[in-house]
Image 1 (cartoon, rainbow, N blue to C red):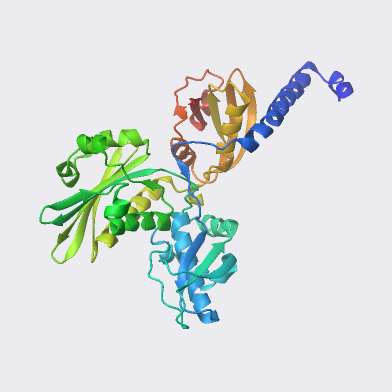
Image 2: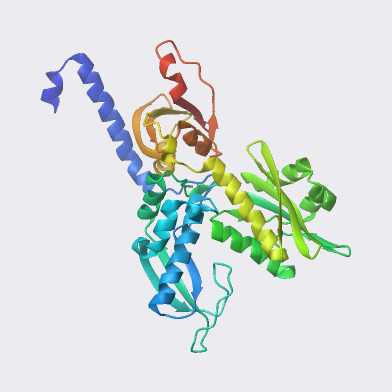
Length: 391
């Protein structure tokens, strides 16, 4: 290799040296990446391609129906669209659901299923029968992307849920971690809906600090600011708040969701308190996915430059490279240069360039920054994202 380098021009030698430096830098990162788990404000959702649901029997007919139901649930989780089954390509896929199944297994379990649907008793009178199904992630993603349907990645915002329950007659409370004991049905409804939608949620402690930060009237009146201040201690990405109360023989919920400086409001209704609480999670998931999911329909095919400053150690690089490599809006990523505490990556988006920006903005240790490029860089300035690494 040394003989070849001496036979080249000084310019080519410089390029080779740069490649060697970058190559050695990447090699040094391999060990760090193997042991490092990337913490961020957003959470990597798990179980997106798995479903457990009740079945009445082990027959082929029951299995076919269960596969369709399970695939529908998975497509809702992965796309973030609760009405995804109305799309023609999805309707066709549901008729051939078994082709997407990677593995499945039966189990007997007396507890309620992960789908939130009461389990029917098996014909033999034994404990209710459940079916665990895992679908092929690559096949599911391909189904959505090739048909220009939304794909919501594994990296999802954490939502703090402030859910007030007004039962009438002066009985009212706000769901919190202590509600697991005092109001298990309400807590279970929120947790099961979040699991069904693949949405990371947390309930507040509702300790003295929370109780002193806002009143139930703030919650029922839709006052946003007190709840945003109360949410600061939880370091969530989004805030979902509202109150459920009986009205005219049913339950009504009035909700608002705050995310990245924008707040949206909606109402929901249902025959039970649990259904309305679940609908709040559905509403939040639909609205977050509408802003964060990726669609290939507007893919530009153009590369994007991502420049990240403030990088000082090999572990810093490992953390950043791991993030970019796994981020759903990014189709491919390549390190271009590493010098003076700054990394420059070339990124090819799956969809629009703005999809990359929106998802990187979820990461609390990457701070967007403005950069004034020189004249030689001005033509590409609009295709460059600038961040500062802040561990």
